[in-house]
Length: 287
Image 1 (spheres, rainbow, N blue to C red):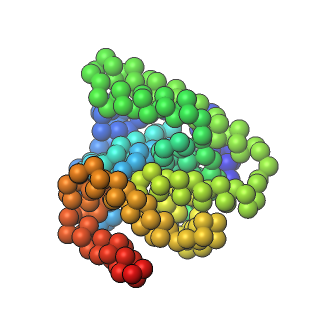
Image 2 (image 1 turned 30 degrees about the vertical axis):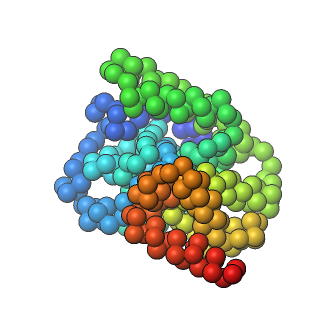
Image 3 (image 1 turned 90 degrees about the vertical axis):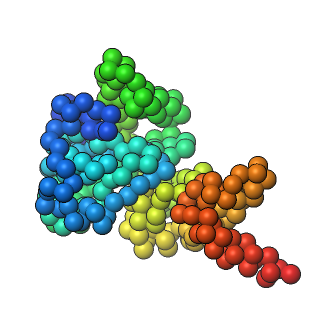
């Protein structure tokens, strides 16, 4: 739940500090190379790369995060930014201190804000909010683009814009939390948002654990709810979207290597295996 302490951070009680690959070192707090910190072995095994943007706000406690080969530390008010294709921690090491965080998942048409409570290296879901303001989403992405690509003068302005826009998003989270709970309709909305996300990405750069976290459910609960509300499994939806995208790219004359990358498959051989299983086999079954 959104305690007073968490609300205080969301309302600007702690100055926002950005940690990103484009940020100045003074904003990054402390940096430690991957191989020189206690969780290096864990980080080598549990690293994620996504085809969508993510961000995380520290609400309570101290958080350590690996990002593109560097480990960063931050307290309340720190916002970690993970751009498309950037390697970052996939979960929390067993030694992670207790903390409260809010993860933000940038999808086409919405941003999911998911509260996370980390206790003894394990996490549990807290509050959830979905921002569907086209203007705010557009401006956040534009400011992020400007910060990532701009020069020193432009970078300072873009970072200030990012902090201001994130502050707007954070106040929206608190306003939504004051509304009465919607019960099963909220669950269905969360699941349909994930379906929409998959239709845009064809599952590229995500796994079921990440999708479950975006929806605000445990992995097993998410899989059950997805089938209940969509009538198909997550994997069936991904393959259906991939088939549609495959035929579109094929008609455009795109190479197999590019198609494999667009569908989130590791190589042309992986694409060939997927095609045999999900296209050729289905065609034979209907003959």
